[in-house]
Length: 164
Image (cartoon, rainbow, N blue to C red):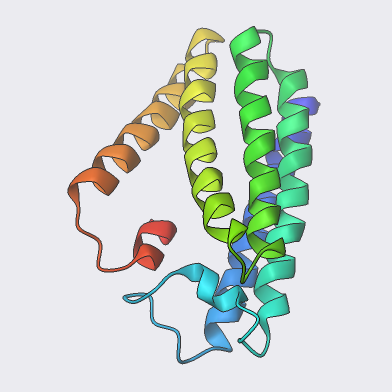
């Protein structure tokens, strides 16, 4: 039951985040994925920045509950550790929106992406050790591809890197 609940909650968090991002992009035709970053959509200078920011905050709340629920679905210390990292990443996602136009924003954004990636890697290891090899190896592969891709590819903008 817990795994089914966490699955849908994780999906809901992704839908909320991407829904807010897509709506913010649509209502801000000046924004260009090849320049800048997604955070520009949440700047206090943007007319409807609340759509992006509240979407990230709500998504962060859903991700935090999802991360907490992951603790119940694992039998290992590494699983609890990776779920804890994911929980901290979800708090940083909320902080990205809360500090939309201030100095802590860059730190919160960087920490969100870093902690989410590390959590995906560690939880992939947990899935492999718990017998869910296919999902575990896919998580680890995703982490490796993201790490190698971001290191080797010269992306024209942070926004393009953020969405990939």
